Length: 128
Image (cartoon, rainbow, N blue to C red; front, side, top):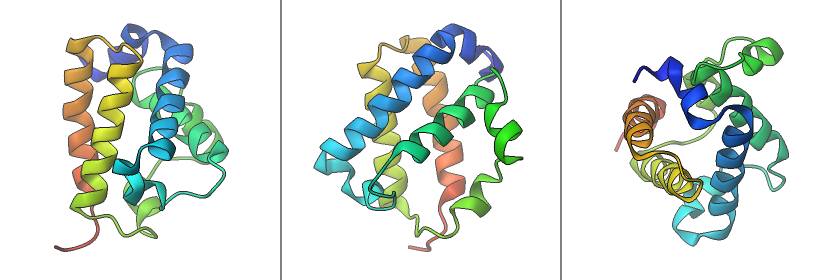
């Protein structure tokens, strides 16, 4: 499976929205994800919308994020946050749990985990 096929396999817009909502619900409710939750604003509406738009295009669907905000430039947009191994690991764990909770097929989930791991590691900006 190529990442560009993920949008269709996951179930499109409705499934990605469900995944994003579960991800942020977990982040807010589970103390295991406190380090990443505190990097976000109290109101998560914009965060939810941005991640949904980004994942839509990243998974091969409509490039909603690019149309609204331009190129993602993920690393530069996240430089304002101190991101180390703890934050990376919490983000990955939270996203993996959200994928399990929302029924993402195991094969797709494993491929997405690999891609998320590469991206999350690239986001680290704190030497440890």
